[in-house]
Image 1 (cartoon, one colour):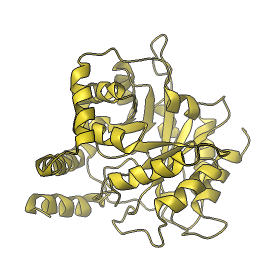
Image 2 (cartoon, rainbow, N blue to C red):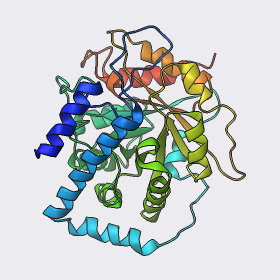
Image 3 (cartoon, rainbow, N blue to C red):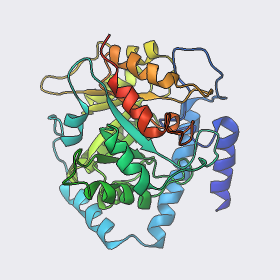
Length: 331
């Protein structure tokens, strides 16, 4: 690894762990628990962005695959396109009636402390489990530094879901949760078969957020914009975002405050997603937090590390947690 990347990695680890910038990195809930060492999100975001930009430069220097280049050219040829306001296929599936919650299950090989997850099954094993236990979306943290995964893992999930075309339940759409800093990553996502990308609003800024939402739309991908404040949630919506994910916010009430009384333009539907962070114990309080987020008006919960902290115990494996989060009746 180049010296610059090593420096970034060590700095990130000391400040808050390898996953300090990822949506699934912050411990957040309404119960008392130990917290990770934290640093200002902006400072961490700059380091993460620069490290990712170096990775993308290296990828481009080594030679972009023909299929990726073709999609990149489609983005550039699209020019100024009007952002769509109507819900796309993923947003439609994620947004159910009031009193229900849908689940996005994230696959990763690394957890918050920077270690690899013990006994992590391959995509071909967990992909059908996510589907059969009720996940409405599957995310892959396709970043080796933060999630231990690659675009190959993303493609493997897509292929396994494709093979379930005639099954019940049918295929689940796959989301790329890489730190997007360049349009070429959106082209990579499309070639891998992803149906959506996550855009970290506080890391990339308003101008790039708009640019990347339009780039995704040019390839028929949807965008999920992650924010950590009500102010930025409103800014993202004003810029055309239709799916907002609240990250790096601790309690359920604080999460809810970020989506309460947002000004939604006429004709635009906004789907709200709450990141459920892992507790630092062996309990499953995350399930109760998912129910609480539902009761506060969220449409979706995104769950990552909590799926794996109990290993593959038959009663607490990822599928069982997904099923439990989606089953409790509206209170």
